[in-house]
Image (cartoon, rainbow, N blue to C red; front, side, top):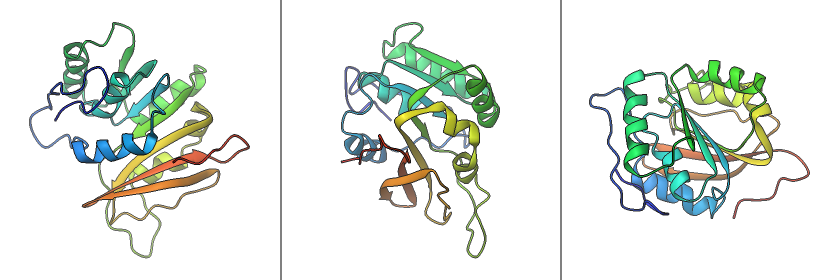
Length: 199
């Protein structure tokens, strides 16, 4: 696994050993950042269920102003911080929170934090034919704190498995869907007057 573009392009990222983390593959990240077309440049980024931090670190390599990483596993968070140092991210530009993603969303909202780009590729949910999804991805879409953390015109990049059919509630608007094997990436924007299409 490596950084694909920007100032740290080609740098290798370490992943924690074991089955507790599923890094977003390089090909999927390449498709995401091709679709974002420079949106990360200057952005304040939040990565949830961060794992190795590959998405947020890719944003920093591509000129993001800052990135906040939220990961429940302390072991994974240590690897993430080491990856950040290894690719030369300045101290303070990356912040790491070792906690539950939904608890972090509430805390960040109450602290007045705002983000231009939120990214999450959480553990996959079960097949949900004939019923509403109960996956981590669906819970993120339903989370009111997340709605209030994203700036007007901001984007939410959400990964899930194709067997997990998500319901996209108002005010989220699907701008683009990317598919790669079993992985589906939804690029969403909050509905509003400043909502411009993703190219």
